[in-house]
Image (cartoon, rainbow over all chains, first blue to last red; front, side):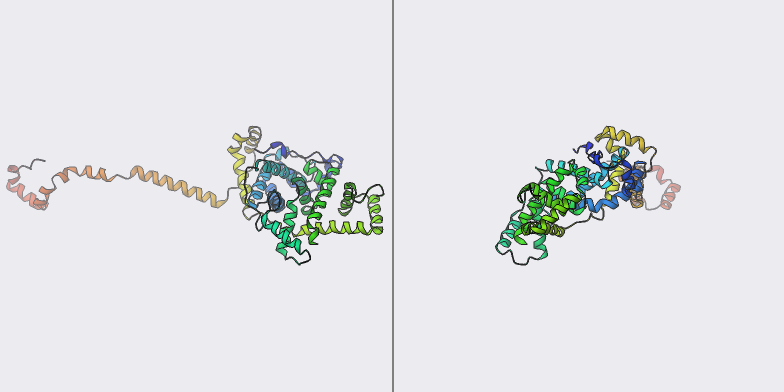
Length: 214
Length: 178
């Protein structure tokens, strides 16, 4: 079972200005309305964030169905705990904080689980699988050849799979959500300095994997 | 930058933070000066940047069409009794809130379907209660069935009246049942 405490608003943003800063976030306003019982406001939040949430979870979990199931669980947690909500951070930071915790639990519990691979790819949590390895080996023999878009996409997915879970989450939040180091830190319960190191190692790993194909 | 070798993690962290726009102004200026005079460093930054830009190729799948409605429907269900068993403390809070809060509206199609099912079940139950079985009908007509051969011989009621007037029936007895 998921940890209910995962829904608490992150406290990492201690260096940030006072609460009032976040009151300007329109999604924080929607959440405050939901807290007061306005279900239409909550529906709007689901509409606003469902695609962004599912896209990140898809790459974290490697499976569209799992991403949607967990995405639904994230909104469920938020709704259940709406009365406890405090505007300590941007709404997106809080939401991805919950998503990160649930995804960690899902992966931990899922060691026994065998999920279907990503569509069009054989990448999994343990790294590149034969098809991508074959592509990488084939391409390594002729790095100068022009790869088509599908091949490039598979290669980038394989590169992403070489990252550990924390590096992957930091990369996805930074790349997909354009989150600052401070927001990523709040989302992942880390310090901004730890995020800096995490992203640096992640980018170094990506470069090492992709460099032969430049 | 002078106290960091180009291969050190700290050095790479600085370059990455520079690329991410996360360095303070002074540190960013230092990196720019180093870049302008060091082709190897420029090459490294270029490679880090290219690898990062390749991530734009990653697909960003949207949630399915049903995601929103399915999620909101689940919230509605969980907001009720299911939650009581799973998480008592939260359920208690929500249960109190439920008495005063507006719920998510039930979709009309669901309401109509539920109504149709209830009416069908009621109709079936009433039918079962009022409909008589075949065996009941046979039992009602048992005495007629037992003497069907005699009634066939008689033909119609007019013939019977005629026999009665003649006094034939007074002498005739119905055959014993076998």
